[in-house]
Amino acid sequence: MNKRMFLKLSAALLGGSSGSRLLGGAPDEPPSDGTLTNWAGNYQYSTRNLHPLTSIEQVRQFVKEHDSLKVLGTRHCFNGIADSAFALISLKSMDQVVALDPKERTVTVEAGVSYGQLCPYLHQKGFALHNLASLPHISVAGACATATHGSGIKNGNLATAVSALEFVTANGDVLTLSRDKDGDTFLGAVVNLGALGVVTKVTLDVQPAFAMRQDVYENLPLAQLTDHYETIVSSGYSVSIFTDWQNNRINEVWVKRRVEQGEVPDAQPEFYGAKLATKNLHPIAELSAENCTEQMGVPGPWYERLPHFRMGFTPSSGKELQSEYFIPRQNAVEAILAIERLRDQVNPHLLISELRTIDADQLWMSPCYRRPSAAIHFTWKQDWDSVRKLMPTIEKELAPYKVRPHWGKLFAVEPALLQSRYEKLDEFKGLLKEHDPHGKFRNEFLTKTLYG
Ligand SMILES: Cc1cc2nc3c(=O)[nH]c(=O)nc-3n(C[C@H](O)[C@H](O)[C@H](O)COP(=O)(O)OP(=O)(O)OC[C@H]3O[C@@H](n4cnc5c(N)ncnc54)[C@H](O)[C@@H]3O)c2cc1C
Image (cartoon, rainbow, N blue to C red):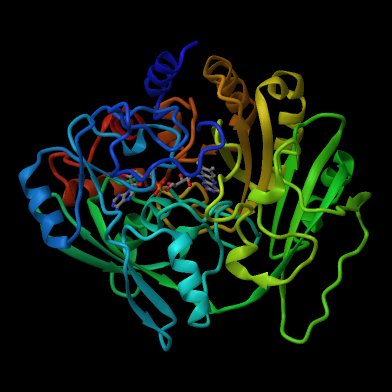
């Protein structure tokens, strides 16, 4: 299948990368062939009409003058959630730190900032975020809008760090919502799927900076994981488990631990039958570990250990598709075994799977809303025809656990079923009606997923 066809097919899915290129161009740089795609290159946005905006006044004016628009973050979603048939705006230049409040332990940033920009600044000032995704390249606003997460049984997703949001509503007004003052409305607004308005500032909780180390173990017997799941996922501040579902074994376990001051850290040579790696590894064994954050127990700043991939390098494979499914953590072992039974169907199309944990939260549209969660992630080869056919099979196996898919990745769950799995959906729609009565920020993805 040629690439153009692939792009069209991807776009046809619900909200349904290339080579080892670095990051992809910035969203407000027109691509050389005139088209505008997401980072992975599997989704072509429906318009080339992209407007870089540089101030809140420009945002207000633009919103007032247009009947339909969407904001592009760093374009790392794999589906049509950020798409618009009419106009896209980029806030990439609005990337300043507005205020760091050491007493309140918060930082306020403009919405275009990426974690890769923010984290070194915070660290230098003696502060840290509670967690990060596998990559630092993504925008804070885009990540929080889709409930992007890292791992760790006590770590909520990245949106749980948000304590206030400033956004421009459909009529061009500026509204600020905060955790302290706005109760339920705030809980509905944080994971907003880009549907509530243009987020222009985000305030995040910070904590004192900390050091971390990561140790990687190879070849964990699957039976050890299923017998000791809770202990294994609790064995570090953040634990990521990578598998290709073959040979009854887990390929790699990445254990990320905090290193407290004065501690002389050490790692056991064996971990439930897995062996400590003797060199840095990439989750996809064939790829260079140069793109990955330092391992082998070397202590370093939190923001250079929590993500798997280094800023300035291609994260993951680049040429890939992704799907991810959230299930209650209490069902994690059954769910893992259900996917393991599909191994021969899954493996030919897979680059790697990752198993992570995320704490429960109170954010209405978060896949972890009120449930301590486990996430089963698939990094697929860019073979759209096969992935499209496989997803319903996987989703059927996970249906008994009321699976919720990642908002920014590929899935095929029927809208009605998906809607039934979000108990606060009606309230969220009410919030959208209040701030965007004519659906200015609605697109095909949202219409189909939330209203279809
Ligand atoms: C290689 C790779 C690794 C990944 N790893 C992880 C991972 O570890 N964990 C995880 O959970 N996800 C992961 N993802 C998924 C991805 O990071 C998230 O889905 C995230 O949304 C991407 O942020 P973005 O800025 O690129 O968003 P975009 O794709 O640009 O936009 C996402 C949504 O946010 C909205 N939005 C963006 N900015 C604003 C704004 N200012 N105001 C209002 N709405 C806005 C958009 O309109 C859209 O609806 C990964 C993706 C890739 C490509």
